Image 1 (cartoon, rainbow, N blue to C red):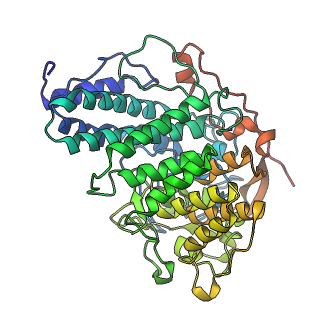
Image 2 (cartoon, one colour):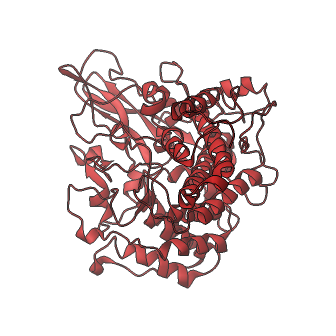
Image 3 (tube, rainbow, N blue to C red):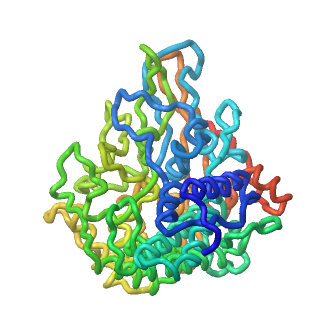
Length: 531
């Protein structure tokens, strides 16, 4: 074996390698970390690859974080990853709550995510034009660098390691997590995957080597990035075969099959998406029957029979915070709530309305999401993989492949656990109507779990049944300290008319470091429309 170092030394070397990526692929440290055994790599997965939780609460009177810059820019352990995913789409609208303080026209604390919520040209600034540093980009490439090193080191140590299962598990988890990192980066910072143009569409930089490369990075083709996701998940499936999952906070083979079914669905590889979904459905998971749900409990929780894997934070209590308390006074503050467009999608007999949402103080104030109550065992609102998604992936793939009868059976298996038997209507749609029905079911089931924004993007470029829509986000104001009124609205046009607004800009620090090789599409400023 190569020169051995102490366990602490291992951690230091990996940490230095990861910190050096702070400005995106800025790998100035050692080409690789020399490790003593695979158990060291197992610990590094926890510290450098899995996402930590935190910032979760579910109390109407909780003291909540008001400054989005603070939850986006905090470092390492307290980082909130991609909170803006919940405010970009049509499931979200602005919400104002609290007491009356001050005399200004808009006398509540200005929403720190306002420019993200209104799809502005420079979204990473708050309403007072103070920069919100998007550290998620550099952090994810730091994690990818660590995973590249771990994957390489497992290969180096495998021949002399007695615990073959440990080698397989560490390798499989690393491949899974790298694929998940690339999935999120690709779907936030690049166009949606379009099958007809994937070979030429620019995506994000792809880096899989553990060595330092003396070059600048540009956007790699979409087909290459998604091809790497597929390859990584196939590796994960092979490596994790027969490896027991000791905690749902560590991934497993079922999670790899589930994520691969999602990736194949995005790629319009429908037969493969169905096959991967079936591989999950054969395993020991089952749908939670909401007929047995008791009000006040979590509908989504770690030990649920339909939770396959989760890591990372859940911040919906902050996104849907009803108020922010400062000392003895409660200031008006702008947060977010469930849009009327979303709530109108639910039938009155749909058990998810009761399980997933709670009505605010009055019917006019709408509903906030309480799918998970954040008691002890936390489920992420962006990184969790649940069995219902697998059913939805399969049903949509079947419908898009023209397998209408099978798709109706698949989607009805899910719906049977979401309605009382007397309220469960048969699914009679076919063709495009069936696809749209399944997409609506996906919206209802997976709301506020990081899917809707990505789904709207991919629907727009689907080659079988494309779907686009305009999204309107209303802006509120307080008048004379007594009335909340509509100031106007911001409109996101359908994808073909507003392409650049459907992706986030790569941070300027990454563009500068790579000598301009990375290029963002031009985003336009968006003016408020007064009615």
